[in-house]
Length: 302
Image (cartoon, rainbow, N blue to C red; front, side, top):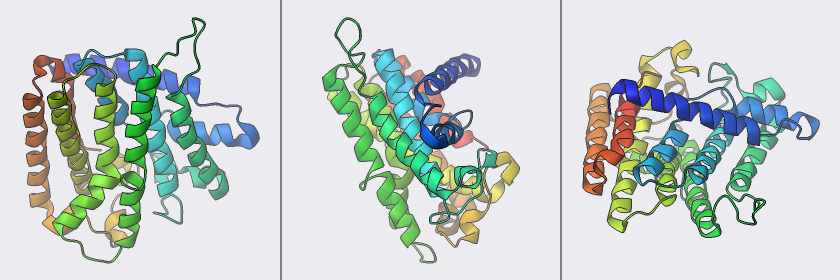
């Protein structure tokens, strides 16, 4: 797949995800809660996690309606985590996606509730009511599988656990293994789950699923390595969030542990691991979207 073909595909998918979020994130939740939710998730971000869901579904010729619900659900979980992470009790950030963070715009209490509501909405999206014909858009067995993957990635063994380690590590040196474990949970788990949720929407051999899991783990870690690099090499205007905050908060990063040159080399090595996993999957050209996404994760500049 060439770059132009990928760009056309990604633009169409992002537009479809935006339309689904626009449809499913309420504007009429009480006391302004809907507006805070929509502010936190609409019209911003790379939508990398939804793209991974949809590309993985494409690779296994899976159910597109189910994958779209999974894509929206994983983005809601990601958005809620950002709302909470930006709050004064966590990272205390005032800029996200080029605009004031939710707690700056709506107050801390409303931001906390907006995050809570987005988390709940993610699982509501994955469990649609039966349609006019009596059959749900997502089969109950698949609903359970998607819920399991998302909950495990977001909970104590995944994203929330990684954030807890992150907060506990401020001002404390970590070795590379400890840093890898923290980011495997905090960032990597949800990216890996995105790949596996898309794959769950179709039929796939266990060996191919294991290979896609390895692919997801590699790009999940690569994303964080590149994030740490960009935090010290790009301006806030480019990133859409406060640059240099990890250094200012005395947080361990791949740059502080490995150095900038070694962190860049590590990101390239992880990209090669991701491509090797795709080759091992046996999916061939069907996985071309995932291959391009691995490159985009490492080559991004914001």
